[in-house]
Length: 50
Image (cartoon, rainbow, N blue to C red; front, side):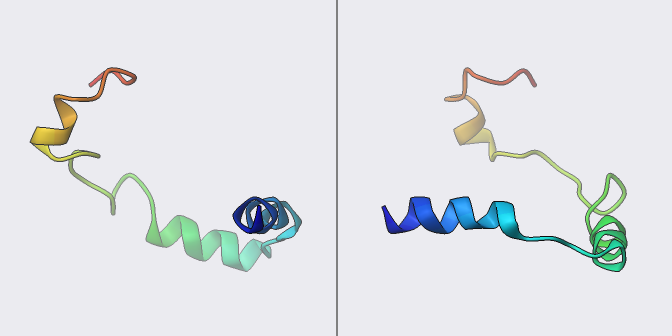
């Protein structure tokens, strides 16, 4: 229950435009590369298309 309450509290977080810009700079299609899962795990996943 504590984790649920903590997760629900995340809906109350508001990021400033500057924070959003910083996140966009750090995490984007140019800075994140590679497979989401390692090869062994990827063979077990049937809920996503690769």
